[in-house]
Length: 69
Image 1 (cartoon, rainbow, N blue to C red):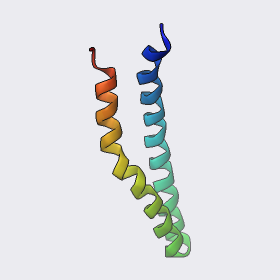
Image 2: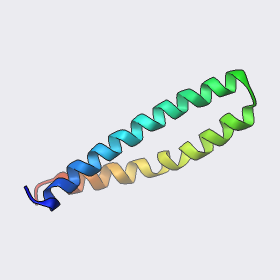
Image 3: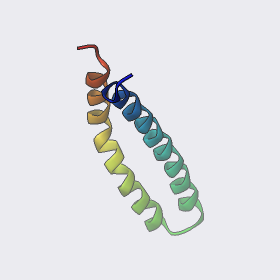
Image 4: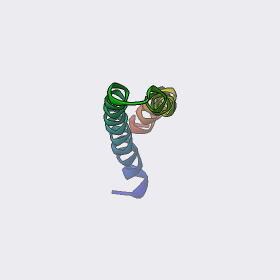
């Protein structure tokens, strides 16, 4: 298997990790919001917004990379 064949699989796994991190960070932000300053939770959600903004592009690019040529 060539290196270029591995790239789409690697990117897919990185994307899965990104989604898992997003979910866990969102849970932490909810926990923080319930127990303390709302501005901390708001800052966390602001950072998560970047993940949301990039998600569609990443999904589409992975689909192109994984499709047969």
